[in-house]
Image (cartoon, rainbow, N blue to C red; front, side):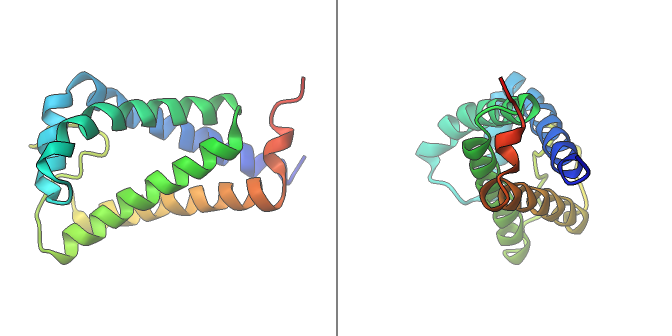
Length: 147
């Protein structure tokens, strides 16, 4: 039981974060598309589709983590998504772009400290890596839901 508690706590926290992060982006896909454009990483033709699909993917992955179902896929995709988010922040910092990350709000006025945002995103990624390790190498996800 003691070993399972950190796993369950981590999946619940990360699941809540993903659900919370998706809400404003789902409600304001046009504003989120502008934030994606500011990263200058995607071709223009992919921005609108990304602005529509990405928040729903976050919501679904967060719900799966909260419910503790389909953990292998949910953990793998969540960790990949977090790695992409962190990489986008690092690339933006390296290119000297002063952008709003768009992580939790689409309000462009909410500029955030890039270093703190990168630390936060790295922390989320570390939690995702921990969940991946526990899921794939320790088999804890198989004990999340028992019929």
